[in-house]
Structure formats: structure tokens, C-alpha cells
Image 1 (cartoon, rainbow over the protein chains, first blue to last red):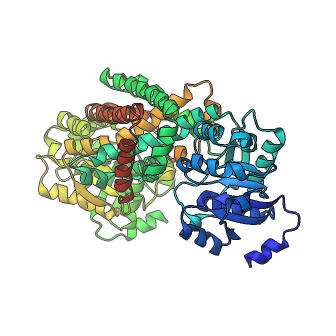
Image 2: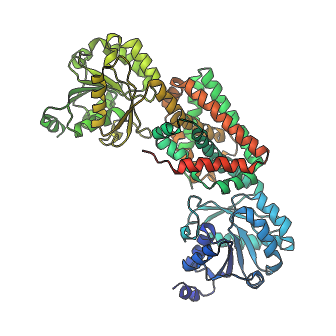
Image 3: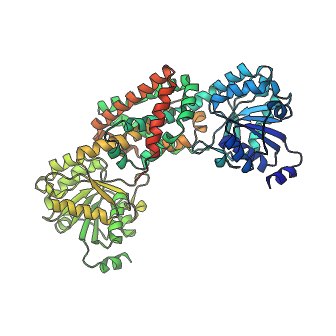
Length: 298
Length: 298
């Protein structure tokens, strides 16, 4: 079925794409481009033979790649959808084999570190790499979780480099837009500062609260009375420890700044409690509620 | 319709109940007891004539009360379902008129302060008051939000006092159980310590994060990239500022202790980031994930 569908695609925008890591991010990218009739052939590489086999069975991949030299020279687009920790190594291995027209993008949650890897590893092919961060997924992982509409209506942030041509950026933008994403652009530093505040810090705070309670002798009693507020506040504390360790380490300077600023905020509330300053508390809560009530995730 | 239904109730467990505050908490209590055919007549008092009229139209109240002396002497059960800040005054007003068999309970989110009010205001009627905290509601408020199944399967914590007879506690427990609640008992101090950790602290932290971001010049940019993690973490930052001001002030000592302990936890994470201790981060995250994944709200 899948092979027939592929053969039916006439003049796809991308004749051949190569995906490193056929899990949630990479698999959904392939499925979305297939649904848009925007891709000819999808070839996958990855560490886990089992994941690659499963991705092929699920119609995500046409083939599992064996030889980088053979697959990369005529590829239109390469997606790096592995954990960020593996990307530097992959960049070193693919750089010699990328065709002159082959573009590369990625799905990493931090961008300054990925850009630094690219500068160190991609050599003369640096300009062909347009970094990206799709704001989607996270709770689930693996090829089985991949879905064609994962990116539909979701944000993807590109962090183009001075070395990128306008054409390269436009083509990578088109790929993500064909997946249904709403694409915007920031510098890598801007990106990491923004996500330190609205994503990395909240994850750290949520992990910290659950860890704080988990240390206590009466944790079972405490948890037995926790209700829906606690449930929502701590949902992200069930995220992958490895992935969040890597994100925190990759973005540690921005995150440390956020943590310091947040600690100052908490100190202000502590002083208000200490001084029985009910007005101050109400003012902070009211300002927060106003902003939160007027905000809806896009 | 409602009046017919009331007249059909034969031998209800509570012939007459009186509710102070006919909003979400009080209104749902009345509707739940009605559905269980456990109540004869429901009389309401409250500050807002409009809310009382609406509660009567909605079938929550049979009558709006005019005279405390007339209504309280033959009441089986009184529920204080106003903001905690109004309870001391109401206790002073009702104490002289409570019948010898009239029991009183409440719906306040903090308990040591309510017990202290009762000790100061109820005089010889103190033993008739069995404090309670229903763990339900919060996002919505008002009579229109009241529903008969608000307490179904939800926890209600009683914090009985030495002055309560076993019979009084059993009868108040029965009332909440007839509402469908799962009733447990803690001391007032235990209750406030538990809820400081699993409810009051998370609310404070969530308000603090949104307030922190709301102060910044680039808050619109930041919020435009906030996604589902931020959405869930900050849902409780849209809670009522007045209510949470009162809760924080009422439970300030336990909350200050929690805030101090949480600040220590954050300091540990800050040091781990500073020292590039990735293992420590992963260990904290993994422990939090394990506890959070094994927990489900009851």
C-alpha cells in the first residue's frame, strides 16, 4: 500500500529525504510529508535496528539505509531527529557525503549547542544546515507514536545562520510548512533564552517539586491528598530524565539566569508572607491571573 | 418541580439544613443531598441577594432565610460555605441561635484558622462544629456552577476537635458521604501541613512563574512560544487572587516552611547546573518521574 502510494507521487517537492532517528519527531515528519504528497522516497538511519524495522512496517520509511555515501549524495533533505547528544557525531559522519544541493535540518529542543556542533563538524557544508525546533510531542516517543498530524498547527522555530542562503532557509521552511507547521524565525540565542523561560524553567520547577515531596517520610500521605492542581502542575515531571538532563546542560547559562530570577521572585513572596503583606500577595496573584487568563496556547 | 420533589422525601436524614453561601460549594452540597433524598428543606443565607435568588431559581434553596433565630433553632445541619474570611463573623452571629441538636460544618480550604475562629466565637456550641475541607471545585464559582455530582468520588477531610462527640463526627461524615465524597480525618495541623505541600505551594509557584514573565518587556514574545507544558503548569495561576491571598495568609507558617524547603531544592539544582553535574540532574529528574508516574489523583 505504502509503496504504491509513494509511486503515485508525481513531482514531489522532495524526491528523497533521509531521516536520522525514526521515532516520534522523525517519523511524524516523514508521515506528514507523505500525506502532503511532498516526498518521493524516505530512507532511515538510526541506532536501533528494531525502531527502524518498526518504522518501515508502519510505512514511515521506504528503506533502511546501509551506506551514507550512497544515500546522501542525491538526497534533497536530511532530518536529524535523534537526541541532541548524538548530533555532533552524526554531523561528522554525514558532512563528507552530503550532495551539493542536499539541505539538512534538525528537531533539537536547544539551538545554540546544535549550531556550535554544526560549526565544528559540517565544514564547508555548514551553509546547507538550517536548524529547527518543532514545538510538538514529548509525552510519547518512538516510531509507534509518530503521526502525520503531529505538526499540524504547531509552531516550528528556525534559527538560520549567516551562512545560510535565503533559498536554503525558504526550502527548509517549506518542508516544515508542508508538515502543517506554523514556522517562525529567531536567532539561536534568542530561541534558547525564550525556551529557558517558558519551557526549561517550568520543567525544572515541576521536577523539583515532585523530588522535594518524594524525599519525605510522609510522601504517601501527601500524595494521597494531592488533587487536580498538583496533577497539572506536575504533569511535565513525568518527562524523560535523559532528554531534560541534556536540555538543561545544553542551555545551562540561560537556565541558571532564569532560575536566579525566579528565586528572586520567590524571595519577594516569602518576604510578603513573613511581613503579613496580604496586599502584596494579592497584587502578584492578580497580575499573574490577568496575564494567564488572557493567554491561550497557539 | 423542586418543591414537589422535596415534599416527596420521606424521613430524610436531615429534615432541615441551612447554608451560608449558596455558591459552588454550598449549592453543590444542597443539590447532592437532595439527589440522595437525604434532605427535607434547604434554607440559604448570604451576602449577595442576587446569588440567593439565583440559587432558589436553580432549585438549590427552598427559601432564602430572613431570621437566624427562626431558622437555626430547628436546623439539623448548618454548612458554612462562604470565604473563610467571613466565617468568624458568621460564627458569632449563629452561636446564640443554634439548637441543641444542630450540627455545623464548613467548606474552608484551611483548617487551623477556622478552628481558631470556632474556639473564639462558638462558645458553648463549639462541640457541635465539625470542620471539613472538600477537595473539589475552584476553577468555577457561583450558584450557576453548582452541581449534584461535584463531590462524587472526591475527597473530603474532616478535622474533628476533642470537643466533638463521636456521634457529631459520624453525622457530619454521613452528610458528606451522602454527597458521594470519600471522607477521611486529619488533625487541623496535619491538614494544613499536607495542603501547604501539595496545594498551596504549587499555587504560589505557578502564580510566581507567570508574574515573573509578566514583568518583562518581551513578555508577548515569550508567551507566543509557550506551549502545553507551560499551559498545564500555569493553569492554577488563573485561580482567584482573593481566595489564594486568604489561604496563603491563613496557612502562612506552614507555607513559609514549604517555600524554604523548595528554595533549598532549587539551590541544589542551581549548584548542579553551575558545576555541570549532569548526573545529579538526571538523578533528581528520574526520581521525580518515577514518583509522578506511579501517582494518579484519587
